[in-house]
Amino acid sequence: MKIRKAHRFAGLIGLFLFAGLALTGILLNHSDRLGLAHRHVQQPWLLRLYGIQSSPIRQGFRAGDHWLVEADAQWYLDGKALEGTEALVGAVAVQGMILAATTEQLRLFLPDGTLVEQFEAPMQPLEKIGITPAGQAVVRGASGDRIADENLMGWQSYAGNAVWSRLQALPVELAEELSERHQGLGPTWERVLLDLHSGRLFGRYGWLLSDLAAILMLVLVASGLWSFRQRRRDPETPRSPYPPSGGWLRP
Image (cartoon, rainbow, N blue to C red; front, side, top):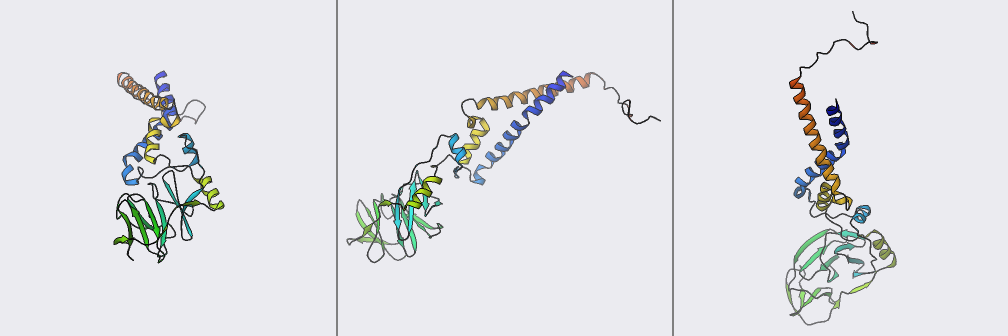
């Protein structure tokens, strides 16, 4: 009876631990398909577990009537998070769209944040991006300035004037909104699941949960084998087809 009680007790205690290990294990096995290695955590309570605190955002690049902001390798267009992790060189408004530049790439966005196209910079590393008086995009690198054609595919040398994109103070409302919601670039969901699976997510002694689950599993296996061995050794007492005393009347 003591072995059976230990078996039940270990099962009840380990129920949630086993379920957590199983669920995180399944998700990690399908991490690539779910894109967990490329999706970053933004939940404030999870970021606090990793010691990531919000930081004030005060500057950005103005592109026509829009603002493109890069903070801790996270991009925002008018407050909407974009898929961008590199440091921004600048941004300009071209043909009703926003052309963002990093040192190695150019990315074209619609005003709603939809990525239209991404292509290599005409020269690397880029130092600046700007706009000509005629509304054409121009970039500057170590070899000089180059101007884009109407399709932004061909680039030629340029020696004219340009208004270069530079960091400017954000509107107060936008700065407050971004500072309040921005928590920095958190860990990926894959990392969070790995830490949860191993117990490291719960801090210094979180690994004890993982060890406890392993110990409980060993107890369940040992007690189950013991109970099976005892049943095989001792013939089972035939059960009466009648309920215990005080139940239905026997015929």
